[in-house]
Amino acid sequence: MSKYKKTPADNIQDLQFFGEFGGVNPSIADSSTFTYLAGKTMGDVFEGTREGCYLYSRHTNPSTSYLGKALAEMEYLKGAILSASGMGAITNTLLQICNSGDEIISSRTIYGGTYAFMKNYLPKFNIKTTYVNITILDEIESSITKKTKVIYCETMSNPLLEIADIKKISLIAKKYNIKLVVDNTFTPMIFSPAKMGANIVIHSLTKFINGSSDTVGGVICSNEEFISDMIDVNSGSAMLLGPVMDSMRAASILKNIRTLHLRIKKHSNNAQYLSEKLQDDGIKVIYPGLKNHPQHELIKKNMNKGFGFGGMFVIDIPTKEKANKLMEKMQKENVGYLAVSLGFYKTLFCAPKSSTSSEISETEQKNMGLSDGLIRFSVGLDDNIERTYKVIKKCMKELKII
Ligand code: PLP
Image (cartoon, rainbow, N blue to C red; front, side, top):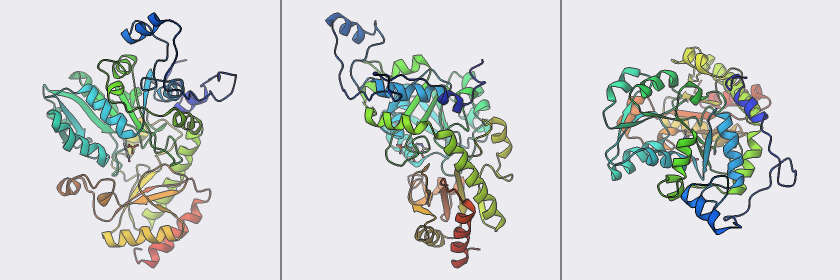
């Protein structure tokens, strides 16, 4: 069977790990270091002439390997490195690929932390970033210079939910021998960037993949060569900068990933319902599952079928004050929590302009359409979403928003 015939959910379902003592959950590797029976073997591992042995947990360990295998399978890639946060995955990847003097082309609508890293931190190493509208392919191609090493984007961008045409962007990247790095945090299972030509796929595991809002974590998925470069003892950023994930967390995330397909379907169904209803009520809604989303047809063409259009939607309220009042009221009425992050069982909402995207300059926020009253929703797993909608509507009516 072609590896693409199976869905990402099938790939997770088909994992078969036998624990050290036959347990259906692998034992947690609670060790930072591993013993060797022969001094020579240890030397060989350090030299890279021998594989298959665990050495030290900043490198890899059995628990992170199990989770890495699951995530690499889900993304149709050969290997993965776990990191202690999504930012750990992003920063280590970019520092691995780029040398001083190199350039990055990045979508201008990305997570604020990633934007700040590129804009404020990478210039210390003389690495420059050019920001583009990722939905305009000509803009990407005309920004490429001899120094460009990376094209960076999110499959579904934070917070404006723009969809990148990974298939077409990857053709541009290939033409100029540039690596395409894709953050797939908003759309696990829905999109498979590697299937569409991306070289490296990153997730913040903090969000949908773990789904419990009890940890931060990240992953870098790629081919064997890139992964082994990342953990090279002499030059690998994952080895030398040490962004490693703890084995206890790796084991707990591995358990949560088994229900990811069910959760994504439910998040998507609920977000579709709420965004349609609120749009009908006259609210300005951005949701890729709505026919009026500019890339609605593109997402339909590129997505893995059956997982919906994702659990995130955005509404635009006329003023910041009204948006704040609405969020406070919705929290009081138990629609969800006024909190950053996403992928929780309860709905989370925040105003990105003054929170998760506050790192982006005022002018650029304006250019991309990030307004004061924008509220981002990560829709929860509510069993009865009609009930939730009625409460949201009541809050909006009381505040004279509708
Ligand atoms: N990528 C996206 C799309 C995000 O939304 C975030 C965090 O909000 C990150 C990366 C960073 O992940 P973490 O908070 O796990 O470092």
